Every structure is written in C-alpha cells, then in structure tokens.
Amino acid sequence: MVPLTMYLLRYGVVNSALYYGYSFALGQEMELQFSFGMFNLLIAINMLLGAAGYVINDYFDRKIDSINRPNEVIIGNTVHRRFAIILHWTLNSIAVVMAGYLSWQFRKPMILVAYIMISGIFWLYSTTYKKQFLIGNIIVALGTAMIPFQLAYFEIQSLIQVYGVDMALKGMSFKVLFYWLAAFALFAFLTNLIREIVKDLEDFEGDASYGCNSIPVVLGTKAAKIIIAGLSLFTIGLLGYFYYTFIINQISKWYLLVTIVIPLLAVVFLTFNANTVKHYHRISILLKIIMLFGVLYSVVTFFLMEYLIKL
Image (cartoon, rainbow, N blue to C red; front, side):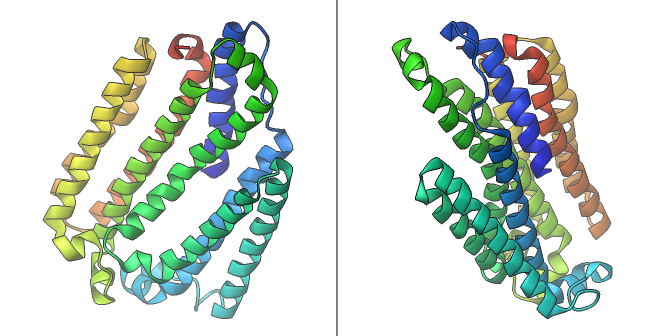
C-alpha cells in the first residue's frame, strides 16, 4: 500500500495539478522536481521503517496473538526471537542511513532526526503505547496519514526551489495542492482509526487477558461500536463538504458515493450487528477495501484534474 499510495498521489494528483492547473496559471510548463531516485528512496525508507515496526510489534505481541490468532504467531515458532530483534534493528539501520542521505540532499538535518524519532515511536508503540487507551490507535492512524504529508513536503519543497520566485511574482502558491494531499491524509487517518478500533473489538479477548487498555476493554464493546459509527458518519460528512467545496463533476460524486460512502454506511450497520471475531474481521477487510478505493480516487483526479482544481 505504501508504494501504491505514493505513486498514485505523485502522478495522479501532484503531476496532474502541475499539468492542468499550475502550468496554465504560471504561463510556463511545470514538471515534477523531486527526482525519481529520491522519490523511490523515500518509499524505501517508509517500507523499511514499517517492516521494522511490524517485526517488533509481533515480537512483543506473542502472548496476546497466541489468544487472538494462534495460527498466525510466527516469532517464537517459525522465526527465532533473537533473529526477529536482529531483523528489526537491521531494517531500522538501513532506513536511517537512507534518511541521512535524503536529509543531506535537502540540506535539512531535521529530516534525519524526524525519521529516527519515527523509528523510536514504533518501538514505544509496541512496548508501551499500544496498551494505553486510544494512544496506540492514534499513532497507527497518524503513521498512515504521514505518507501523503511526506509526499507533500518533499514534492512541494522541490517545486518551490525551482518555481517559487516566479509563482510569488504572480501571487501564486501551492496551497491548493497541499490541501488536496492533506485531504487524502485526513481520509487515511480517519479510516485507519476506525479500523484500529474494529481490530480492538476483534482482539478483545487477548487484550483483556494481558492488560491492554483498548477502547472496548475500558469503555465496553457498545461504546466502541458507537465511536466507530460516529467516526464513520463524520468521515462521510467531511466527504460531503469536500465534494461541494472543491469538486464540480458527477463522476467524482458517484465514485465517492459507491466506493466510500455506501461502504462506510455498511460498516456502521455491520458493526452494530457484529458479535463474533469473524464478524469484526470481515468489517476490518471491508475497511481495507474502502482505504484502497480512497487511494484509487487519485486515478480519477488524473483524468479530471482540469475540472477538479481551482487555482
């Protein structure tokens, strides 16, 4: 999902906005300036950090997973625990070295610091934050939302270096482009937060046995279902606002209605009627599909950007 999301947003949103909107307004052809090599390096950093996070999370979740999903426990069974730790640090070390090179290219040391902090947060999530009320859910959701924001930062910074002066003279900025990418980030945050709470319902037995203060454990399953419904309806409301504020074509309307709004309403209905692990697992899969269609909306923007963007 990481490379798919970043490639689709780069070429479906950023490149299309440059071609259909900004080039016309500036009076000159504008092209992507964040090099293809650096772009793929950014993807690799995210994938390595994510993989390292999964490894250490599975390492510390062995006991909980032995209750929630005993057939899927790998560390301690298929993979030796010591190898898992070595793999975690190896993946993190490679990612940090890559981030150092990216930081050097942009002449901004804080880029390296940021990725080192992300690595540390993933470790703390697995050891501490995951067991704390709501904090773990928010960290995972923010981690997903940071993918579009990273793309926005590096792409827009690279564009400003080349076109910033000419744009300033014409009173232009990349504010609208940032808002588009931020909208994808917000959608990723909300849908992942919903899915994390659904997964907490699915993992209720193991979490309760080992002292995880998840929303269902602390507030009860009924309250967790109400929160899921509230977040789902809030997401639908934001999509409605987004549509009537920024979008003026029927294709987007029907795409969002069929692939996002109706499935989210189904999530609400299915959640209130769910009472088994299998039911919650199906809802989790449905949310994955919704997230995928959310990312694929960037393909729609590729063909419709000349109508979608308002400079």
